Image (cartoon, rainbow, N blue to C red):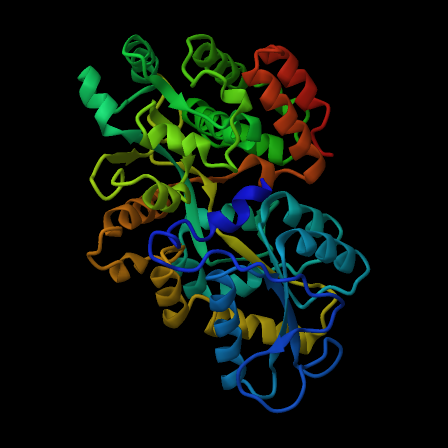
Length: 452
């Protein structure tokens, strides 16, 4: 999962000329590196008054947007400022887990929701924000309804959905389609039929960076949703015994192995890495006709693919339905947002400061405009009004429409599950695609780690 984290939140930054992620050193200790705008005096401490603390990730343009949002809040709230500390991704993961476990975490906890949030909730480390949203209904209606799935544990909301959305997309190269006289797939049956067409024409049907494992996972996420809807994986997330033994899971696993056996993926896919963008190169050079990948890959294909994007040869669509499937074809998977929680160990005054920050400044008009300018899609209804008519407007609108209209935006499985379960998941998915385990063995293996 890690290689995606920066790009998932800046998928158009390269396309729009925004600098790449800054290589800033991780900050040490609990002391904030900067205070917000407003000047005067040191940073508010975690222990007194209404001053709150906030930790988040480095990497531009996201870092600058987060900093500016805090600074604007501090300028308007001299008596209850927020001090922030910035970390590189890996350092943050280590630091936040240790600090929260010791009761010394920040007031505002930046995170990915899902499995990590569930662990915080299980250990009573974050505030229940359900009543906060009941009292501030506009904050909830402003955001895409689908963004709350990864913020919710056992029917209660424990985090504020924030920042941007990056769904998984089915991309295609129009040139190979024209070559074989085919149209983009409208069903799973179409996908399997196209496999034969493209193989006969000497073109790989799908590119896949299978060595990275999480790229394989995207196929299972979409297939299970299209076959059965969202409830089957929800049963896994809720740690229901033998949830992986659902017949829909067997159907999903069988279908993906059928695709592998039919040479649906480029030869040698299990040795191709997503980190190198080699999977994207196969698509934009026409050696592969299609690719299932994150919205964040648009920017690198635009930068590295010559006139592939600007020349109109890139096509994109949501994943098609499966025949007789129960899933809603408008649903999607990927990153439904980023998530801000409040530490249960914070003082009442600090919690109030955090809530005021949530209700007055997070995803206000200024922040929304900043995310759009950076080439991202904020998880806010109406954000598309700021997309303009530039060369990327159509893709931004596509991402916005998919994300805003999805009744269910399933979080990537490796984020939704605990780190322990996620590693087992990725390992078994790799074996599944390599045909070294059967669907039954996959289900048996994964049932053993439910709840871990």
